[in-house]
Length: 298
Image (cartoon, rainbow, N blue to C red; front, side, top):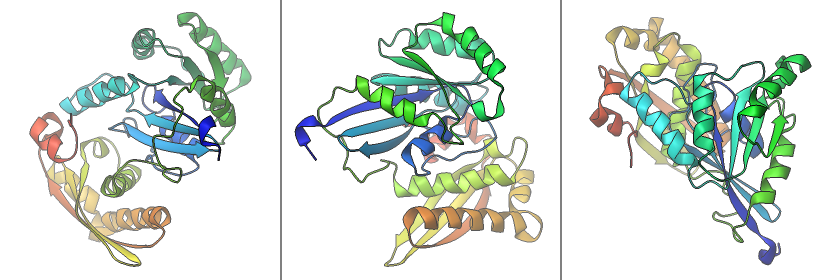
């Protein structure tokens, strides 16, 4: 590779919950590093994904969804999202086709106007929306600010994603790589394991239970061909603990099985998971408790 022609840029992804930001990140990387769920507010912290193609290195920053907060944790998530886009070379503002801009989108746009960097409007989920609705979405958003371009995509179907990669690299100016060429994320292995387990909780439980759960990795032991993980799942109510465990332990077994399958694919070796469930009342409104779970970091 010609080192003199290398270039790198930081690309932030922002939008409200459930517009497909994490799916877009995973699709661009060709690897699953961000957990995905149909439930809102899945992503709680900024996640860095790294893609190196030929002489270009993309550093993507997936941010928590911007939403009206109700807890201290929610406040932290929104603050984390906005702080993560500061300093980016390019911002991808992701919206869903057929969703008119509401106060959340308008507040995001006001923030984007202050950044002074190229902003792309990414209209996602075109695979499930009509062309008429897509056209209306373009008409609704285009007058709100001057976007560099409007790119309709389906992150799930990998349709239009290559256009994003082709366009954003034109704004990269850093003449070096920030990360090794084979690196896809700077997330610690323990955090990846905790997030995968939390994703399975989101998948297998309903209502407010997923939002009141946190996962900590108490032990992460690597051997030649085996990773042993001991994780603790925290919830806010005793009744939630029973639901997470399930009748005869069936739900907790499924959480462990599904998490093990994903982690074995990611780490490329056998994984053993030992799960425990504990109650920590109202931890989302306790800064000290949330810090113990990896949130509210400086």
